[in-house]
Amino acid sequence: MPETAVLPVCDADVFSPAVLREPEELHHVLRSAGPVVHLSRYDVHALARYQEVHAALVDWQHFESGAGVGLANFRHEKPWRPPSLLLEADPPRHDAPRRVLREILAPPALRLLREAWQQTAEELVEHVLADATQFDAFTELARAFPLKVFPDAVGLGPDGRENLLPYGNMAFNSFGPVNDLVKADAHRVAELSAWVRAQCAREALAEDGFGARIWAAADRGDLTPAQAPLVVRSLLTAGVDTTVHGLAACLYAFATHPEQWQRLRERPELARVAFDEAVRWQSPVQTFFRTATTDVTIAGTVVPEGTKILMFLGAANRDPDRWDDPDRFDLTRDPSGHVGFGMGIHQCVGQHVARLEAEALLTALARRVEHIELTASPRRHLNNTLRSWASLPVRVHPGHSQARFR
Ligand code: OVM
Image (cartoon, rainbow, N blue to C red; front, side):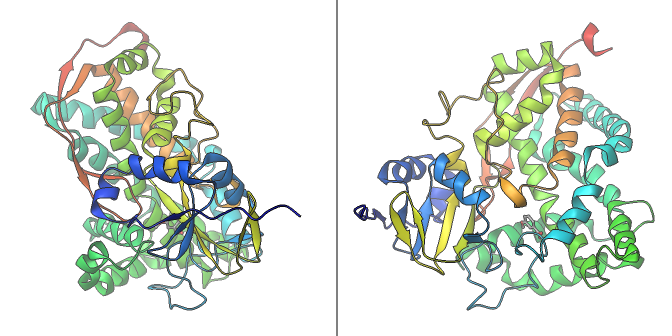
């Protein structure tokens, strides 16, 4: 019989402000400690190496999502909202909602949006540059652009869109412990949830958006009428903050790696690779949990049935055993295989939407900007799950449009 491995223990608060602000040191400690680490403060197990994170992500039979993908165990604790039919469900319940949303957000279904989004990106960049060459790239670009295109694509009405980011921020905080970040927003849970719920109704949605297509799936019998609003809710929960902070990761990467910006300007078709490399490098979604469905052995350690397992996507995405020079943001590497969008049956269903947004914004910017640099330290916004931003002060040198862009 193989010897049982000694389980390393880490007593750090992995959701403390210091860790959320700068997680790299903790990631290094956890990867070095062993393939599985007990986090004594929360009594959960942690995976931070690429191999184990990847293996857990693709093994939904042993690592379930239905007990919640946050710290709270839905077997014992009442969730703060009805569980997501996608994120917080396992096969077979997960399958129909997933199939429906996958079709609606697949590349062929997005082709019609491409030109309009490119145009919107060109106008936004033009407008920002006309105003100033120094600005906040987080608020003016990374935050502004998704809000210009995504709510319209869903078919949301005009009122209350300012609730989208606060709702997403709340949802992503809710995967962590009930710390100060969660408490700070507690007074808005009812109001924001009610607004989101109202937007998910058929009557609230335009006739030609993602939302209407979800309701059409219910009309065809591919979803029940009770499932449709919850699938719309997934779009509103997972589709805004993620892309905002993903785009911010790109802009931060380029502002701090001028030679990579030159590479993108020379070859704008690298925009999509650049986005994936930025997602690998920053991992906008840092962590998710699973729950062990049986006693499960991970690298020689038996993890008991019912244990919450915290997967550090950001640590896996910089594991030196998987990536050469992992801390480098580098457009010449192949970032595919990163777990920033997860992996397996729950892998981000909106990733093609996110890539399309990134491609539009980055190419519009590359066309007009020769150089982008930080003018002050960027400010992080702290969230229990998202590696997020408050500001990204930059100066740009507008350049002449290059021939290859015309
Ligand atoms: C959801 C969902 C999916 C992915 C991420 C997420 C808040 C939510 O289905 O509601 O984060």
